[in-house]
Image (cartoon, rainbow, N blue to C red; front, side):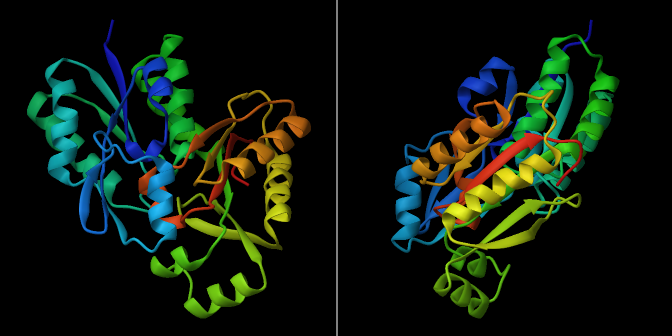
Length: 286
């Protein structure tokens, strides 16, 4: 019987408990706060401290996993004789997946293996939710080639919808103009966005005020939520009270209580404190 391992990156946003539960191995990432380097594996900075620093004007940056880092992460599993299925961060948002794809190709040649890196076209718990659903199939005994096929098909059903509290972080990332952000903030306009089929962040609506934004997330979920899948997640960037409120709205509407997790540094540094996201499996992407 083949030894199969599922690997991913810190961008999957899964807690240690979930990683351990499904025996998922993740590659950690590097980020900087005011020029000081941190690693997601070793940092003692709490999410509250990280987002507090952002609110206070700290300069935060991230770095994609480079080719050598990808090879260093994957090679021990080749050496141990595993069939490796790597589910990577969206190529529409980062070059990390392409580096893992190249690393996998080079190591396959070196070890005469046939392992696969999949572009999830997902981010944050969207990526993590795909990883979990594939890991469940592995637990049930699904063979490697079928796991690859399942992952490639399931990724089109992973939904990520979210809203932001302050658009200045999108300005910093070059995603919107400073003028547009200023007008939106003055008028208290909150964007609703999702990750589309190209793995990119796309606006799907605008509402006035935070509470209407939370309500809109639930209304979007109602369009295509598949109730056969009970794992629903909320990620919050230092806005836990809103996350609890959103979880209550989801539970009342759909009868499932979402798991709430802090938004990982790697994602949150681009969207900023106050970001709140809802993840679920649907019939398609909303």
